Image (tube, rainbow, N blue to C red; front, side):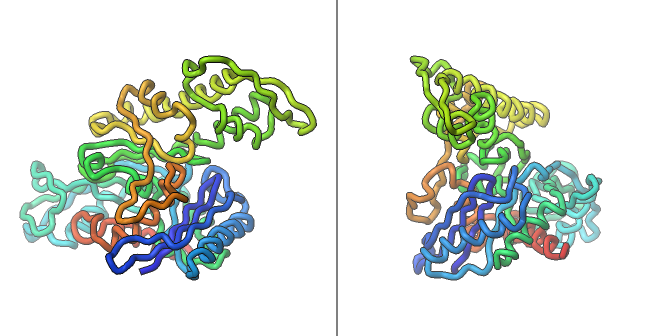
Length: 404
């Protein structure tokens, strides 16, 4: 089995080609990484540039792996993604729950009004209730007269997804399946216990921060927040009147979101916008700017937790990952701000030898996308019958190609 995962982010595009060996373990054969082009906040703004960058990333992976990739598992995110928990209920005609009953009750939960231009991408079953009081994960072949399904509905803009798939096709690639990136990041970083007891994950990318909650092994809540690494960089560039490349350097070399960590205020000569002159800023200036934006991001996370009463599902606290989480002090600052345990998460290599090229929070989503077909094959992602990922993302794939 050989497959390719493609993570199209706002700052980088990463393609990974992998196969399984005789022992059934994942072997990463090739990795291709290029700077993103034609994207803003995980959405296509220039199809030609995006397709060129996608093709370049995949070509680099192919050259390293000596394998040609013609189809891909594609990650999707962006501020156009919305979610809601919904409930469906049906009467059981034969008293025994059959597969058609499960499909029918999930379809009943999908019957919700959506804004114009949006389409349900998939419905993730959370749990089922038989006769109003028996909560079950798998109702198949159980007996009762009434079946309820509690389902997490995820929707997105038709045009945004259509454009993403089109860019892949322009690069000569067929999209085999589409995977919501917060789910991929969770598979790459959360432990089984964290998903079972309850935990949140915040994947801070370049254009968006993907927030999700897991409890009892299933997803309970998702939210795409349009504040991420590029916003931190832009703030520095604007406030310090410097170039974006210089602002990115300052963020990585001197940035922190905890001002109290600075034992001394160091003056720095930085490049001015005209590229011909320099001017002086201080490390405390950098910290004040970054702390303000970190507070804004965490305020939105706290709002989600409070508004939707998610604290009860977060016994394991919050796991932060993604390139934006690498700003010095972010995890302890988040722990202090939110008042819950917070840890910085690296990809957990499941049946995969540790690969130094992607051994970083920066590649949590990329590795999670790679895990999807492997876990699907190993049948570790299950709900009522078969792989939930296969069912929901298979429907999503069919829907995407029906658009064309």
